[in-house]
Length: 270
Image (cartoon, rainbow, N blue to C red):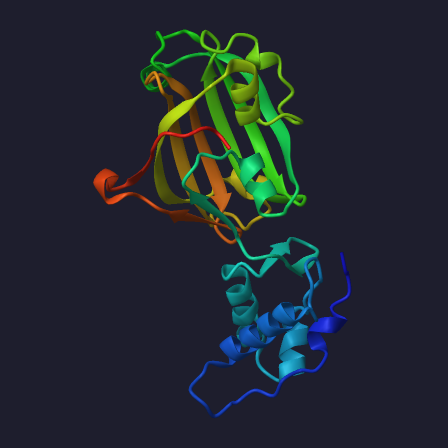
């Protein structure tokens, strides 16, 4: 990873300060062109607000807007205390088959990894019992993970699965193993459909720290309930994704549109 921002300042384009296009957007577009041309590459450190303000002879507020626009467009991300770095465009979840984070990230040419924050057996409360169709108090594994792509925190994820349905799964090392791979290969799971509820929520303090984002930043919350061909629930997962690094592309057949949720049709875990 490049740690000096010299590339950002090279060949600075003159801004049209009398035109209709906002100055911050002109700077943003100039930086994007450098990324597309290869002058700025993935992992390169971008100039700071102060350096951009000096190079383009604009205010720090304008420079800040340019960097924020770059991050919002998925071309950059910030790490506290280190600066703003070039990245690929946002990871996109385009679902025609169900994929877990590991498979989706690999498909995008990035290296997935996980940090297990919590993995233990709990008793199903009323909500879990209803969603997993198990008795109240039945043993359920909770798997709480930080999901990363190329070492960058992408999502905080909590998954619940029934031990009665998947005995021994709590012994699996999910820092090294994909949950969906385990369900498919070890337990022969075949998926019929899944429903997801999607909403935007402010990150909790814990989520902000784990995802390395400012406090109360909006995150994309996705709650998934996955069902087998036998109409049996296999998992309940709640994920909190960084909004600056992730977006969902939804393709839903007209006959199966449901307002406020996504419904997937029959297929295997990819």
